[in-house]
Length: 420
Image 1 (cartoon, rainbow, N blue to C red):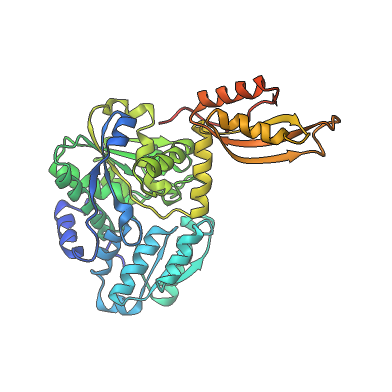
Image 2: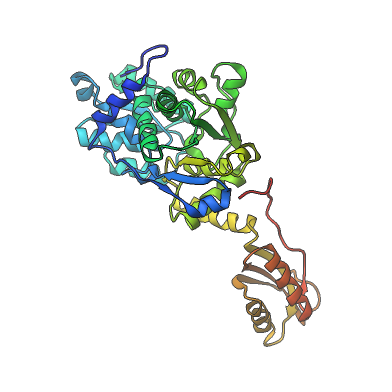
């Protein structure tokens, strides 16, 4: 396309116009108070449920706004975008609705569930490159070779204006809020939200959050301009952008009060907390907003009204299962240990009965006879047990030892620091 212009070129008027343009085509999601998350964090927490959009993310706002501003020729020729998933899904949905052919180039690390969904929505899906920057190289080639219109996922003016409609809704739904926490990938969402919030309520804090493993915005702030960084794999794959958008960065940098970086354990635990306390399945990118409240950097928000933008919910089910199990282990609620018990009849039953008597629940038990040692009267077993917390795990271990079970060292998962 691009609808991109130059300089300070996205205004509150653009965002208001975008809201009118996309009305009826994009959901106005709820922004609800969460008593459970408020108790957990010490803030008065409200959650903006953008993961409940039709394709599972806020990206629909910008995608529809951009597509509706295409020329007739560009509509007929079709559009292309590079995306790890959510922008691709949003474009595929709304392009189909508007009768526009769409091609999406996704990096090899894009979740399989997002790749499959794009194909289901009728998009031509091409897999190329190790990250979003390399995927864009192929998308740019398609623009030159096939005459497709490129719709940038976070740096296009129309995309930023569409994303900014979230900010308008948040201010209307929580008029006396103190701060809004916004996940940062390429920077389009925080640029749009920052423009809307600071134009209407400049005293409201705009706080960005990004994964430590892909902190391109913080790196740009440090150097004064965007540049490509070396990333590591992160649960917040929707935020894994090696270079923040230049336009998005310039629009956001003067409107963002601070940016915090969160580690993988915090993101993982935030996903679990949202499942348990908010009854919502939120991907790592969206859960990062909650993870930010687990850091020491935002302790000053205690007692204040804070909106978390839960920007996406497209997490691979297998990843979700692994995250939940790992988070339960980090939380001290799922423990693994080796024990040596009698290999006579009733030995395993006695072990299970002792575990049950403490109120713990056996998840898995495996025998190890070949490498368990020379004493054939005893057998080593590997146990995974669900407990209430670490104290309960200690009580279980003591109960087993008092019943003659030899308990070896518990396996404790790596944890970078305490969270949540």
